[in-house]
Image (cartoon, rainbow, N blue to C red):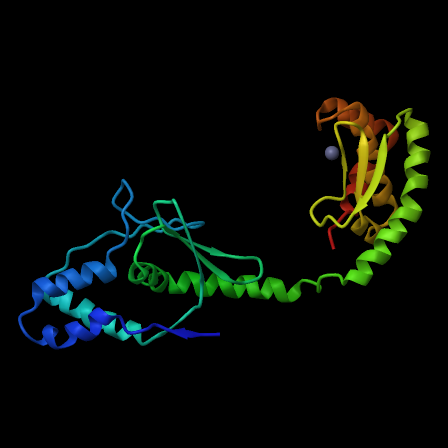
Length: 250
Ligand SMILES: [Zn+2]
C-alpha cells in the first residue's frame, strides 16, 4: 500500500514566484517545509533511535535548491502511517509488531512538518518495516477461538490434579483456580493466593507445566522472586533451570 504526497498548496502558489525575486518568501516556505520542531537542544528527536536534525539556514541558492527538492519529493510515494497526536513536544516514529508505521506528534504541529519528518526518515522506516514484516511472516498464525476453547478444556481437566498433588507435597493451600487465554504469562498467584493459568501452557511439555504449577504455589509462601522464593523452588524442583528452557510462548 503506497500513498503519494499531496501537492502542498504553497508549492503551487510559490512555483511562479520561485522564478522571480522571491528569496524571502522561499525562505519562509523552506522553513515551513523543512524546519523541524526543536527541543531545548535545538534538534528534533526520533525514537527509538535518536536522530538529531540540525536546523539550517541555507543561502538563497540553497533555498531555491531545497524548494525544487521539496516539489520533487511531494511527487514521491510515501509510506502510509497512523498519526497519534498528544501533549508531547517532539515527533517520534514507531513500527508496530504488525508492521505498521505510527507517527506520534504534538497536538498542533502542522501536517506539512509531520510529512517532512516522515520523508526525512524514509530509509529508517523502510529498513525497520522490512525487518518487522519478515518477523511477522515467520510467526505462526494466531489460534482460533475453537483452538483456545479446546486448550482451556484441557487445562481445566489436567491442571487441578497437578495443583492438588503439589499443594499437598508443599503444604500450601491455594484459595482459587482459574484458566485464562493470557498470551504474555503462563501463570499468576494473587495476593489472596488464588492461582491463574494460561490455557497456552498446555502447548508446553509436561515438565514445563509442572514448573509453572510449582512456581505459582511457591508464591503462596514467597510473594516476590527473592532468594527465599528460589530456595523453595530449588527444594521441590532441583532441575527448574532445565525445565524453564522448555517454556516458550507459542
Ligand atoms: Zn513468579
